[in-house]
Length: 299
Image 1 (cartoon, helix red, strand yellow):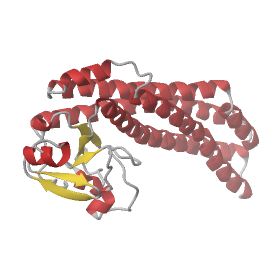
Image 2 (tube, rainbow, N blue to C red):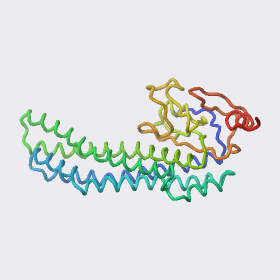
Image 3 (cartoon, one colour):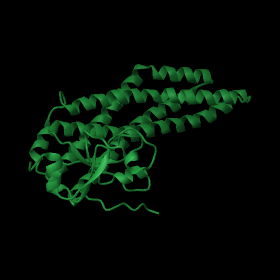
Image 4 (tube, rainbow, N blue to C red):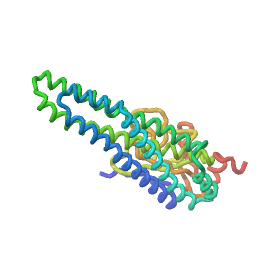
C-alpha cells in the first residue's frame, strides 16, 4: 500500500524546482555509477586471467597501487563533482526565475569556484571520493580471499574456485559501486548546495523526499519541513522512527535520495508550515510571522 503523505506545504513553483533537483541528482548518480563500472570490468578481467588465488590477489594489489588506477579514481571523483555542480547550477537557474533573488543567485553561479565555499566543497568531494573508490578493490579482494580459503579447505580445485569467485567478484564490486554512487552523489549534491547557499547568504531550505515506497519513514516525516543549514535536523529523533543518528541534511546519510530546496524568497512559501528549530518543530502560520521570528523583519 502506498504511503500516505501529509499535506505538503509546497507551492507549485517549489514543487517544480524540487522535481528538477531530484532529476539532476539522478543524472549525476547514473553517470558516476556508469564510470565506476569500468573499475568492475577491470577487476573482473583480472580475476578471469588469474591461474591461482595467489596470482589473483597479486594482480588486484598491483591494480590498486597502479598509477592508472589512482588517476582513474581522481578523474571519476572530479567528474562526479562537476556533474553535481552543473546540476545544481541548472536547478538554481529555475529557483532564480521564481524568486526575487535572481540577480544575487545569478552572480553566485557565475563565479569562478576558486576561493568560494562551493569551490572548497568541490575539492573536498573529489578528495573524499577518490579515497572511497580506492577501497573497492581492497574490499573485494578481502571478501574473495575468505571465500577462496574456505573453498580450498573443502578440497575444491582452482578451476572450480575460479568460476565461483569470478561471479562473486562482479556482484561484490557492483554492490560497492552502487553504494558509493547512490550515497556519495547525494552527499555531493547537498554539500555543494549548502556551499552555494553560504556564498549568497541563504540559510533556509525545505526538505523534500522522493515520495515512493523506498523512502525511510523518518524521511517521509520530514517532507515539507522548513530547515536551516546552520541548524541541521535529526529526522529519526523528530519522527521517533528508525535508529537515532547525528543530525544531518537531506542526502547526508547512506542511500538517502531526499533533496533540499533553498528558500530564496519567502513569498514562495506556503503557510501554515512546520519549521525545525533546535531539535523541535514549530508551526508558523503566516509569512509575517516567519519573517518576524527568523528573518528579523518587523522588529
